[in-house]
Length: 240
Length: 361
Image (cartoon, rainbow over all chains, first blue to last red; front, top):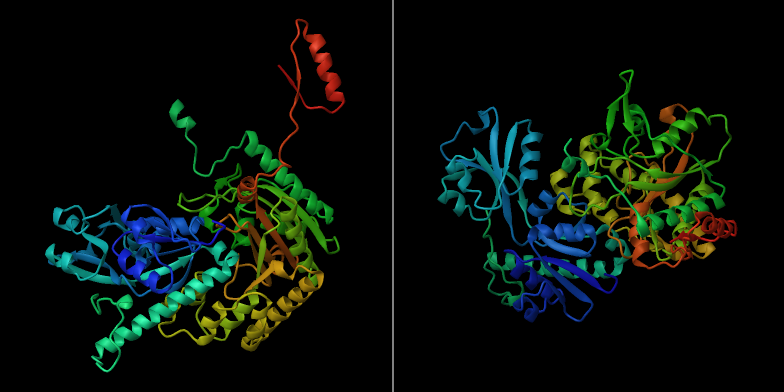
């Protein structure tokens, strides 16, 4: 840990975009290592990478085995980790929602609501904050099935396009928060490696800002602008 | 209870033996020697007290983390979740006639319900001190003691991150926000989470809030901080930090100090100087402290104080990775068993009189 900086990055759905942004910021994730399915990579520039499951990223960072990491705000909320969140990378956009069966209009009138979720902590704290008694049923996946199978009255989950919800006869009852990928940092590392981490934050900030400008240019259909560089390409407005 | 359930360990229960136990004792001893060397007097505090003492102490441990139980007369008691409230109570009662400064140190286990959670390292044995007194001298003294204590256990590369409770509060004062909103803002500042700031305020956060998160680094950050300090509270906070910085530089240890004005480090009851101690090799703070001028007043005696504590659990973790030689004991002299025990035991006793470490085999 003492030599250079170690970043925990998630192997899940935002891996490709994450690696791209990091690459543009001068943090190149070694491709051959990824192909070889190694879990601990170094690019020989005092930059190391831990390829982790999304949900383990906050753990690695809070514990300090990684100095910083990149992970969705949804995962951070569930982990309730005591880490710094200095930067929003604005990728991996999705919404944390409560979804119910379309015909189940009286959901909120039930005395006790059964909620299936991959985010039991988020689900529990949301309903409890509203004073609604809930029974949370933790699931590891295919949460959308739970209401149809009668396992739960509703679900708390993240949605990107809403397609899976619709396919399973679910509608959004309430949006809890919007989630995007964040840079998180260990509290001790932020102090002990202040210079290195400061440089990382600044470099990523630059990349994120240029991506935002590019997207704006593209949305305005401003053809006079330079063609977008491949480094920053992303699908625009895919969320919601 | 069946045997198998007796052998289960309740969460948070710890047990040390062998080298780990020796290491912890050795660290405790060395740190205690440093505290005593600055004329801090050891105080042995009760394992439990009335729950209200800790509740009034506040801030340290949220109430759901305190182990409570009912006394024989029906009173609500609690196992100590921290030492500072206990010290405050003793100072306000048994020591109220003593002139200041009063210097006290303690060492022992604190009992907290630790929610099982990944990434958290236990912080259940604390060595700390309290300096009941006001002023720059007191603040400087305890910072220097903290550095010396760490030095004494071979953690010479520790960094003190120093801030001031009054600075952030002063900035928040100028924002005119409700109490619960204020708490949420402090939480967001603690996470350096700009997005969350925007969500709480439901607008773009004022520039001052964004800027204070950048007031982090060497003594050079005090200058821009001075330009932002438009409230008396913030100005006093900066006077305090500038004075600390100047004295540290004059002593020649300016490099040991880092400033962080963007968050309130530590507990809610801090009123002035606050600090955290970090060392390479550990993802959490080794300890921390601060000035708490109104806490003892809650127990009836208005006395300003400053203090800090170190986590023995975390210190032991850092020290053990550095393979210290001072924690090892001399190897014992063997005393062979003989047919007549008295002969062997006499030899053993003689060696013991000479102060040798022995082992009968």
